[in-house]
Picture 1 (tube, rainbow, N blue to C red):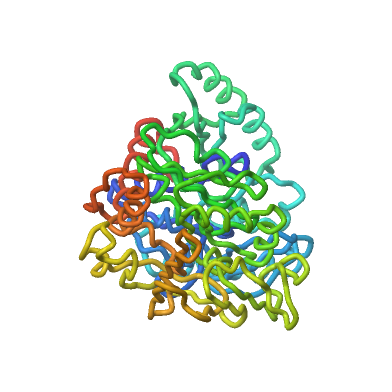
Picture 2 (cartoon, helix red, strand yellow):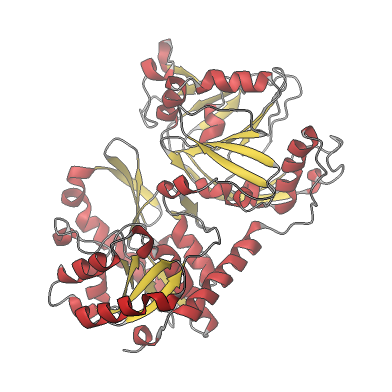
Length: 509
């Protein structure tokens, strides 16, 4: 089990690295996180919802992701409540102050069911568990679901990860160990110092001091890795989008207050010629080559935030100047003309969201779409033929019409086209409206398909459309699916892990 001295210590990536290393050694690692809190989700082949970080660990382990790997998922709604998902299905909503009172027993039952399902499917596998936050939050330990309760239940050998980049690494480790009970302390088999900058031998004295003071061996010192890996929660986006040598295009992503599924943008982040700029409501929009509205957990609440910041007017002016706006899932809904939320699912109210009589909310009105929220979520993996960019646009004639896109749907709400505008093109499979609208001089498009940018040829077609406006030469369309690049990153992560970490104390009973 990989535990951390705090949130953000690097547990998710270290767990992924451990899974890939064990796979290299001929074992079948089984990634598992009992409870995760994240709006960055994945939909498995059975249509179950799980955290994206466990999907990443599954790929590291050479497995198809399944929601048994993350049996309890909490999706924050931004008002001290979270949607509760057990074994891939939404089961209710919990307020923070009542969560452990109302959901502890059902959550523990879901965790045990997920464990049983995963082990039954892979009887020879080795569980590789990830903790959550800190394992010694003393006010929560009696109701701990996913850290030491699980470690004790499974008699797991635990690796404690501390982030030296944050400072105070000695206090992090010594304090964490001091707060463990005498029964729990022997579970910690080793320490891992993460994100160390400089030569490792500069930490030798610190390593010796930790081992003397704690009696626990330091199994490794992981260096600061310059590779860009998918973040688990949106706070990590604060450090992204900085200067990139060789970037020719700037694409602005609206960092919505309830942003979700931001891993959709990882393929663009990895493009050498693209710089992503993550824009908070209130920051100036500027004149980027494109603007992306990403997914949203609270579509109407985020619509209100955009309006308060004046971004609705900024987007219209941007389009008047020939700009390009693209909406993904919740972002597609925001771009529409009408939004109806009769059950109050999406965090809005008529006053703040531009409502009208009859409960109809006015969207950004950049696409002729109407979305009604309610009913069951759309949760399924999908394949779709790319209808846009179209052949004959001077981008790559004859290519886009044959492209098959794969990804998944994850949304509430049913969207219909009200009145297609000049040049509009609606998809016929419900995935949502490759819908170029050029009446204001710019272009607006969107889709419900999460993962659309993972298709290398389609991503390059879309980027080449932007490049043509800048009179830049087109990029090659000979690009593999982003999963190939992701796998190469996992290989390099595992290389670094093997070079800097001694796993033997964790593998020996």
